[in-house]
Length: 384
Ligand code: CAA
Image 1 (cartoon, rainbow, N blue to C red):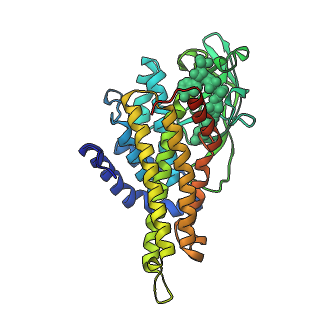
Image 2 (cartoon, rainbow, N blue to C red; image 1 turned 90 degrees about the vertical axis):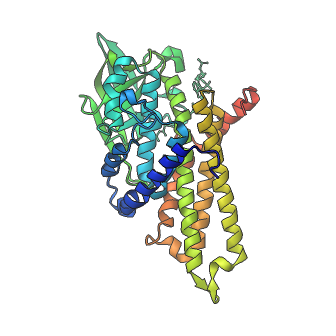
Image 3 (cartoon, rainbow, N blue to C red; image 1 turned 120 degrees about the horizontal axis):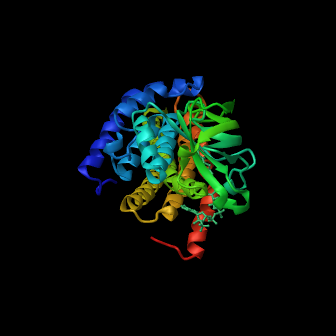
């Protein structure tokens, strides 16, 4: 399973596994009920270097590779998917975008605070009428002297309420379609940035998802990320990394569901023996374990390509598509193996099942991943 991992990668995985199961797991069930944001988990994760994993040490980060990052993220997701999605958006989308497209000044101003956990990052592109089709977004950014004035509403923003910094996309030139979209860094408490409706969700209930309303929100030109018109490219490349993150979350939750099902089946007795002795369940476990492992390998392959510096868009979409569909199958089977106990909150599989549901939806639905994958195949851009 992990024969090619280096000693350092294994050490990071084991360290995060221990932390996750001893600390993060303890509050996961309660957090699902209370919907409390995992601020304390984020603080401890920052102390362990998990909030700036791929940020170089010169900017206060850990400077690890993507393989180490997905190992760590899967371990956090194993215990608490709500905490994992906060870590994922923060590291994969926000830190990576500033690292890749930010000016020297932006890197100095923001990366240290992100890596130290002082600021948690969010990414705001989706709008009420622009989900799968972000080019149709309406939020505008109009230049006014040294500032851009942002107006519009963003929807379904992970960590929107708790973020210290949000990367926001907005239209600077509507005639240019995707080339007229720009990206801005907007910090908390900027006048005109208003936290709107907070959603009551089926799963990932400890992570807030909300509207962000921009009402004449003035953002200094020094906080334009990249150049004017780079916003769509920044978002798409950020989502490539983000999609590997969703694969890692899927692998973590699926492994937790599989382990819970195996444990339960070796304890539960029916017809005079533990239910793990029945071939019907043993074959289910064999299929679940194979699927989790297949998703893990796709996740590693996409992460390894990213680390090599080659284009990994195709592999990221494949990993996201397969892993997110897989975790829905695996959590459903794990719940089934628990019988009636799978349907009640006393056992964690019920939460795993609900948490997994959004994985085939956010950061690009399964249908969008198939668009990306088939475009690569038909345009013969395959890099296998
Ligand atoms: N990296 C860099 N650039 C990319 C790119 C990538 N992966 N994919 C596309 N581009 C560039 C193209 O090169 C092209 O640029 P040029 O015009 O300069 O050549 C430009 O973007 C347009 O490309 P396409 O014609 O392929 O774009 P499209 O309009 O057909 O859309 C899409 C492609 C794949 C459907 C895209 O719109 C998409 O991914 N949609 C889904 C959006 C999404 O994932 N939303 C989730 C919201 S975020 C979220 O969920 C975060 C959270 O909080 C958890």
